[in-house]
Length: 258
Image 1 (tube, rainbow, N blue to C red):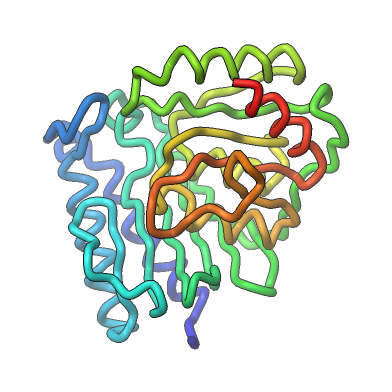
Image 2: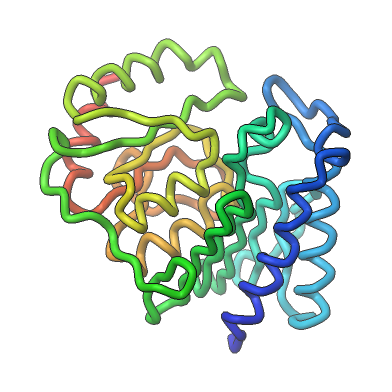
């Protein structure tokens, strides 16, 4: 399909200003254990959905804050996480992002991740490379896990999985240079894409957590897989490993030990 990358990025960046609405961020609904939605999430999703449908009325829309049943996997679809890092937003931690991917027949065509608190706009289009505020980005060249900075995700919605998760964190921590935890999968993926991180892994992520980041990583020279090294699904939750294309085999071995 035809699309205007600059126009899409503009829609995301403009809507991202809503993350500064502290009143709306304080209007919180509990969806589940450690799973929250604020009025910012709802306002931002509605705004982006409206703007995208106005410009691309034939493209389906998948959003975190709606019922996504009935979507056609063979058709073109926007995949939006209006606020990736909602818990961070609630606590004014300023590590949250808007994440929008565009897919057609399972192929990633475009990805935009915007961090409004640092005004960092990550963009990528299939075959065109990846960019941060207009400048090209690439994954790191770090050759080994021992030299790597690795981000982890705690899968907070499934705390009964904590023993296995934290055992994996320890194995990776002992094998790498150090680990980090941001609370935003989208930002972790973007930071791997621009070389700030060498890898990132987390269990049980939803498609909107990683749809944009997968496009960004591929265009920046990296890769995103599940824990078995296979492509993640766009239609169900997936365990995720993102890296620079060099250190993933070492990560797979450590993660499979559990």
